[in-house]
Image (cartoon, rainbow, N blue to C red; front, side, top):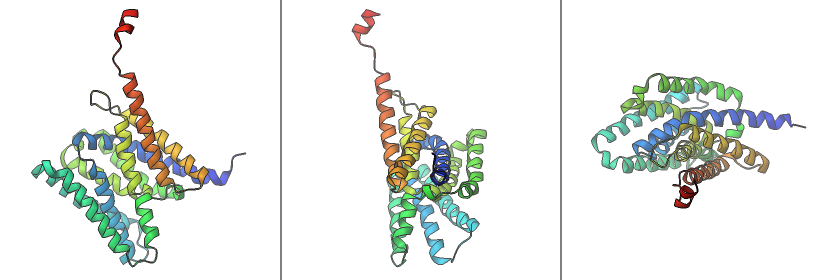
Length: 262
């Protein structure tokens, strides 16, 4: 017999993970094409700093206030990353990576005197997807629909500053649901799974790899009664490796003996 309490936990988690992965896959592919892998870590960490700072300085901040603070910080860095891309493209990966480590250090300093600092830090980094409710998902759904609509309806926004703004908007929402580590994994690893032998990308393969990872990670973490974030990261990695192995195997050139038999 199906345990309804378990379903109340895993169904919102499934929906959240699959929705985020569906949105992250095309964004991750664009990140890999641009060669700016650290941008997702940096943007997520910057949004995390804003959320942590707001919760320390403001007692019970409103949902709207949290979004404004997180998105404002992410957008500011989006403009910075665009400026770096245009002025010092050879150093952009180093600069973005440096922004991540600085933001991570600021987070640690903000939480050093917090009685619940360790718990807050774990929430920012690993997320708490198994504690996500339908109301949490509904609160961020308009953000995801907006990003998806602009991405699909206005392809010109995928280039230049538009990409950085859409990316900042998506990551600002996702980091609150998934945490920094899972956001990075769900952006980069499915995109890597979708890479073809010729260097192009297969979006459907990326979506499939990410979807399998979400389902496996949530089921495994629920069965083991352990945090879902680390399980999800591991499952994204394993799924991507399997996808790449299968892709490599399917793209192998036909041997001479096979050609002779044919």
